[in-house]
Image (cartoon, rainbow, N blue to C red; front, side, top):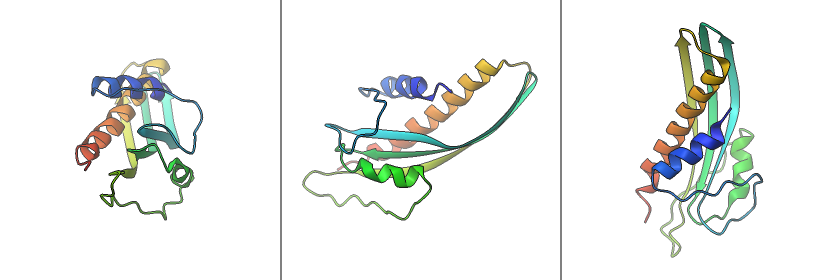
Amino acid sequence: MHLKEKLEENLRAAGMEVIIVDTIEEKYDSQALLVNISRNNWLYTPVYASSNLNLVFFYTSTGKDTKYFEQFKNGNKTVVFVNDSSVNGQKLMDGEIKLQDSTKGLISLKAYKKHLASEAAKEVVDMLEQNVRNLP
């Protein structure tokens, strides 16, 4: 799936500066958004395709506390984050997006994967934009 590229494209279109990394660090120098596909069930035929994706994401406005992402990635959701309006104004946000899709008509596997990546990236960026607007 081309999720990384579509996320980068959508984040840039929303006016955000993006640096893609391949490893999860415990701390970054600026904001960090971590996204993982936790469930990837899909069916493809040339005339019908369907999918049921679950994506988990974690956002930190200061680049700290990314260690908690592993808990969301692995399905353990016992940690609750609250924006405490501290001096740093750190905002921690996590979420899960369930994306269901059913596409009928002639479509190639490559095109369907691009379609799924576009839909998933749009959902993540929309959710992020809604919540980042409320930063202190």
